[in-house]
Length: 235
Length: 235
DNA sequence: CCTCTCGATTGATCCCGATCAAATTCCTCC
DNA sequence: GGAGGAATTTGATCGGGATCAATCGAGAGG
Image 1 (cartoon, each protein chain N blue to C red):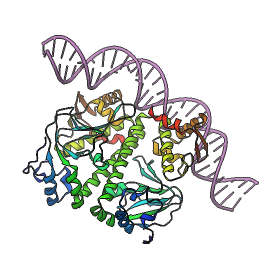
Image 2: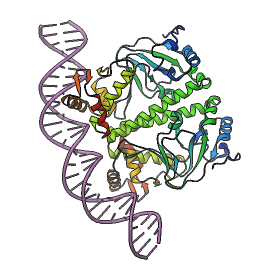
Image 3: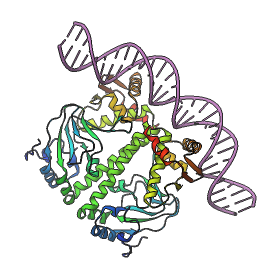
Image 4: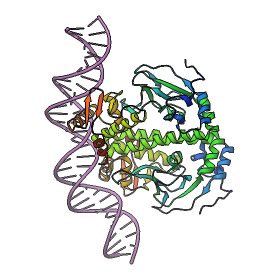
């Protein structure tokens, strides 16, 4: 299973400034690190969290990427979020006691695991951690609300543009190229994240390509005019 | 301003079983009650929370109803949620430290106020309260995610039907008639909540009326066939 | 290398809800 | 009660994205 290696502290992790400890004191980071377990490598398509399962831990992506997805009443899959290194997955499950969506690796992926028990206890004693978890929940809520509104007021071009710009900035935060992007998710995943169909995503990307805003080659995308994309959603 | 009357404890409030204390122990409820202030009456249209303001408290509706709304990039208003008695408002602000949306009374309204300081302190000492607040946040997140997906997969009839059914069940929980409903919100509010236009809401209501599923007279709505409405969203 | 399969692209058509416009009802303030 | 104004309803038209359908491209495995 998973093994706890004391020498792998959160404080010395390369992700420490963009991960859960980002806003914690060194002392709090040290304590948090003591509860963190390092998960095994997952291959693409492997499931990290099963929908409906009782929450037993919080997960953080270390390397690779994942998607959170649920099932709609009609059986169609929808994608709630994509998770990059340092980003938390399963928070809504931690809040509710039960996971409501699957988390699946999009490519070979590694992760950290923080068991619920110790995490609950730390929330009582570490105000910084408590605030941070609350903040992350609030932020997810903001994000979901914003996307909810966008779905009904911003057109396909605006939504896809925002997706690309947002992804770009998150990659940049991780010292990856913000313009030369390899998408780990399929067109179908993107469509189901934005509330569009695969065809529309494809057509819209083609339109961006014709406008010379992006260069598209399969899953590689180069942003040629990020500013043009960023200015789109303003209506 | 607001005055703290010790004799108005949460334990003896009529809302206690559908309000914040619903899942708290008697002891926790007592301690929570000690921090609760009773707000003054608000008239319709009065603002309870101003967007952008630093969070200084959490609010709970006592009587009447309210809406949470934000401003989109184009200046249009959108409605995040409607709040009935016993429901919490301003939670996302408490999570983030700053309110991101306005909360406005839809009719004469009364409320309780729980200052942030005491609430933060209680979160450290009362595990039940901490869990409850996390649960509420997680629930809001679920709700927002669900609505986000619905906005792009379920049509206007389905969304309006779900809104009515949901409202009905929340009224029933409060021992109000689930079928004879007086809407405290305008058609515009409903439209901006569901990501539709006023015209579409009006037309869809008219269609429900023609199907004899509802009776509509201005802001009074009678649900004649709740089952028919409830079965709609399944596609 | 070839084939098989799944993902992605492109094309044609259709429908739901937005938009513009006008009539009507409801509510509030004299 | 009457007048004014906002909210709501109804009508006509239009367009963006869904849908159906076919082709193209890329990676896997023999």
